[in-house]
Image 1 (tube, helix red, strand yellow):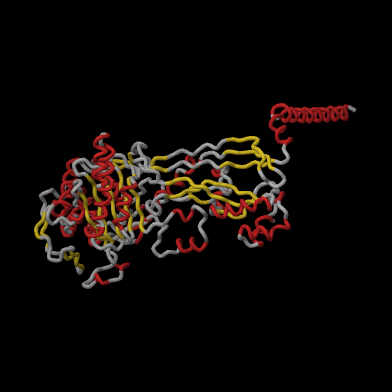
Image 2 (cartoon, rainbow, N blue to C red):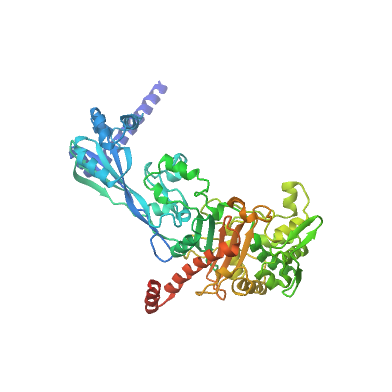
Length: 598
């Protein structure tokens, strides 16, 4: 008996609790939200429309907009309101196959009241035509999204990036849970890296419509919140000058501010036009782009690694001075090469440089001098100094997954090849050949460290974000000054290999490099392009107070002095013209602008 009473009591409690919950829900709907639903109940029919948020604008460091927002139009259907007998007519209006419309509107679980996209990326003329016929098709609507227009086309495209629809993995990622499935998001470069800040918050409109789907009045409107504008660290004028100088050649350029690590320029050639993606790239266009043998989608600044050639002699000079195996007065007699066992290690100048000290060895890029430095140092010491300048590790740039490069030592050779290290391999390493490999961004960071007194900064894409110090290179100030004087001579002294970078606007210091692709023989200049040497030039300017450091790489460009140095000169001048303009007082600024126009 007691058991039955207890059951009745429990059931009574459950009924009372359910009644209380029902009462609270009714109170919420009728009292708290009564006015809202009263408006909706009075309407003949209503729709909830998403208002896309204007995306934040990307600016260069001088406030120049790199992108602008544009409208992206789509034809959608609310299937619950559509007359299914008009599919044939609708296919003519939209210029779509009947089968494609049926496939999109007959999916399982599809809501009859939620718009379904039929055709995307409509032109203005298509929108006008569809609007003129829309009254014949209840449920047919035009939806508007926010897309991008990339003002400078393929200039800076690897850095700026592009927008696209969420892919399959992104649609399942909780980080994109608040993104509508048909919205545009950043898929590359800065657009992807800063997507969350740029994206903004969509708004919402609740509208009343008549039986033909025409808007009668707006009931509720929630305004969208614009995404955050971002001022990037890059200089678009530097980009334009450098990309023009590259022409059709493949290669890469990275320019940074030596005192902060801000990226002033990042160029990968060949590039691509991000406007291809703004209205949905076609399958044929994507295949042509992704299978292009010149790899326009590859970001060579971070994702490709190459032998540094003679630019590596900067590391050799610093290591030799720091370890005391040479002094600035140490002389070596270059007769065009050295012999080691059955092997001959030549100098690029077959007749030799004669007796040279460190300064002239760097200015004229004497290989024999640095064979001797490498012999005195040994590979493990070379490894130690190269590592402190950032080689063999990521720089920390978050744009894409970057390669680490290779700086070999005895341990590396044993682990990778199960072999001991040989002196001949040290000779190759000493002139930036053999196993050693670097990325263009690593070279720019190293050049920045030489220019700024040995500080290694993480590269950043945001202007005035504040420097992030990653470490200090193993080099005394006096050592760096000796090297910097020699790098001045490379460009400005007779016999310097970087003479093509000499500028009337500023004083440039730098180092050329020619990275061998295959063993060269007489007549090799007639080899196919894919077998020709790579060209490097790394530089900083002005020499007395560096504001820019950069690395230029030209694939199969031949000699660094002839192919890469002129590009570096154009890039440096393009940046320093803007730097001078922005630092001028208003009167001076106007005069500088007048000079630029003349």
